[in-house]
Length: 425
Ligand code: GDP
Ligand code: IMO
Ligand code: MG
Image (cartoon, rainbow, N blue to C red):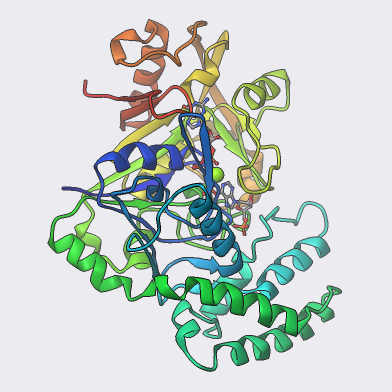
């Protein structure tokens, strides 16, 4: 039984929710290990659509147990409403959902600070965050002043929330924001904390036992390698380690327990929020991909920026992420594209490079070097096997494998479970 990490390998929204759902058919556990409800993972089952923000996508399969690991920042009010909605839709949580007592809590002041800071930044400096309080919460964690899920079980929890809110109100006001109503915060947090109490536990021994029992475990990454705090397009990144390295740190399982890393990439590229994006399209083709791919953020509803597949980004992600295989998503979105382009390198300052520079100004000067690829011009969504794919589509997949040096083991040609090809070539 494998211990598999699935990571987004572009700028997020690659289709992680869908692939987790497909692979969960055989999994005992699904573990989230970083991020918070900045994530929006979509799973479509029949005519039902679920968008999960904090809950691991395995929650939709009754036999699967789910862990919200220590590496997450948990907006407990958001999680309560997410779980209530799932319960209303017939999902059972008891004995299936475990929240680490070490995970940090996103409090209303984190969201207020996120929004106020973003609002004050001038154009060009805004990160375009989801305003879910992610950065400010991880800041408090690093500053060692955060409140953790386990604190909910202590008698002085609400007093600490009140004290922290009073302290943060001073900062919020000094930034031109509006101070929070401390009584209201205390009431809202009390309600959410009481709802979540039964799910809070020490998840580390649970996961160690699962490893010892050789259970099938999936680690569900959020965001993508290019949004990683270290490896992404800093500062236009999120505040956590989105790569496979985040999984042991954010769940407590030993690094050497991981035996498989699947990188998830779209057959093109998208990004939501600000920051560099070398293959971004500003023309009709970009609009076509956005329209056919329904490229709107699952969390904020913002339109996603669209562009061609960037093999430099994919290779870089594979390198830092230890990716052994790709899940290549949304191939169907390119069904009607005459000529598909793939970025195979960058030209910058008269030089040709094939890795992602750390310097943002250098990255901004990078001009993609493209290779053209003839499209297949017919639908792929109904295809259920490799043999049924149009020849040109097969060639495109093979080309991406060749140029990135990583095999495609899963191919997705539509949002539903059935539109997934597990390739064994
Ligand atoms: P995640 O954050 O990585 O889980 O991805 P999102 O859920 O934010 O965005 C992916 C979107 O693409 C969702 O609306 C999915 O339903 C949809 N999707 C996933 N795979 C495919 C596919 O192969 N084809 C098409 N057309 N849509 C897909
Ligand atoms: P999933 O898991 C796409 C982006 C935001 C912003 C930057 C920082 O669904 O792929 P943050 O709120 O994290 O401080 O915002 O990161 N971002 C995402 N983009 N998918 C996500 O999650 C994202 N989570 C954060 O748009 O540019
Ligand atoms: Mg998403």
